Picture 1: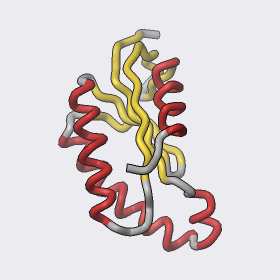
Picture 2: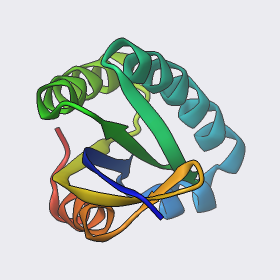
Picture 3: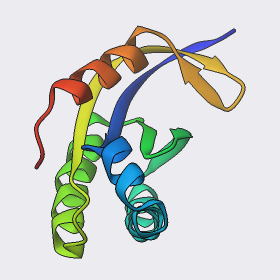
Length: 121
């Protein structure tokens, strides 16, 4: 397997499980609206979505500057949707293992850990 240096962003919805328990259809509709915006922003900021799971997204960027700009713009866009879903974002730069179309390694794990410590906004 090959490696490369990448900036990884991990983002998910705060309280997603609780929201799904309360209103699955409504939450999924809101998530779809968010993902449409997020997917467009990923392209605009030269990122690549490499993994998802429920509400979470894992995105790689070749540039840390592009990743930071994406995170700031994404948070503003999610607030602008005003649909009740609050996103948090974590980021880490490091060496990743290329595993098919997926990326693995400490940089991915650390991005997820920083995301779990992040607050909304």
